[in-house]
Amino acid sequence: MSATIIDGKAISQQIKDELKEKTAALKEKGIEVTLAVVLVGEDPASQVYVRNKKKACEYIGYNSLSYELPEETSQEELLKLIEELNGRENVDGILVQMPLPKHINEKAVIDAIDPSKDVDGFHPMNVGALCIGEQGFVSCTPAGVIQLLKRGCDGQIDIAGKECVIVGRSNIVGKPMALLMLRENATVTVTHSKTKDLANVCKRADILISAIGKAGFITKDFVKEGAVVIDVGINRNAEGKLCGDVVYDEVAEIASAITPVPGGVGPMTIAMLMNNCYESAVMRMNNSNIK
Ligand code: NDP
Image (cartoon, rainbow, N blue to C red; front, side, top):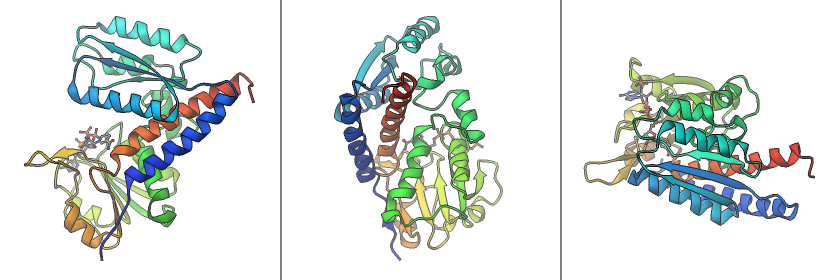
């Protein structure tokens, strides 16, 4: 068997094109979508992420406000900027690019963002809403994985009732991923570095989602024949080439569907961020009773 490739590039493009159309319709009602992007310092990877987010805004038709602050910016200064953006009626989303310089407490920054503008979905109120099944912003990477499962393979992947094993339990991927799969009625197992007999636990999965951050960790010994395999990992292999957690070639031989790296989960994260910005603008429109 050779797995069907779930093409994150194509699916993310589809989502961005849908948003572009909906954004044009919103504009006709006088509503513009605005994302404020805050970058502190000069981390090259963060600069690339920020640039890509601004490019996506431009493509869809959002306004992007860019705040590129020097490395030595104090926590107080950053919190002041967030407070100002929280109060600006025309700002729908606030994104502070992580990681922040060591002298700034990331939790304090996340907590300071107005939950209704927290398009990254990291604020405890949004995490709590996801946990108890209420409406709120969902962390973009796991939300992207759900879209890959729903839109990939011509919509033929059923999630309800399936055994899903997630490898990794971080706050930004593993845990929200588990909650989302639960919301989709999968039977969910969350594994981590202390899990015993990990390969056999993974082999139970109809849907295996790996978010570890270790190149070549998930071999075919972790995968049941016919499983759907989603690789969230972004790593560099010994040759410096971008790769996931999954040994793609051998796993693709036995899986029914698989995401590649690059071109799988990666592009979905920005698409879902853009989706959260749109949702935020719609909420603002509904609150101001413009129909
Ligand atoms: P973290 O380092 O925060 O979490 C990694 C998780 O993997 C932890 O829960 C850890 O377990 C678990 N883990 C580590 N080693 C093992 C092991 N040997 N066996 C089982 N579990 C293990 O990483 P993130 O969640 O932030 O990211 C994970 C990967 O996803 C990274 O490669 C990252 O680059 C990528 N990523 C990709 C995104 C995208 O857009 N595609 C977005 C975000 C992340 P424990 O808790 O016990 O330590």
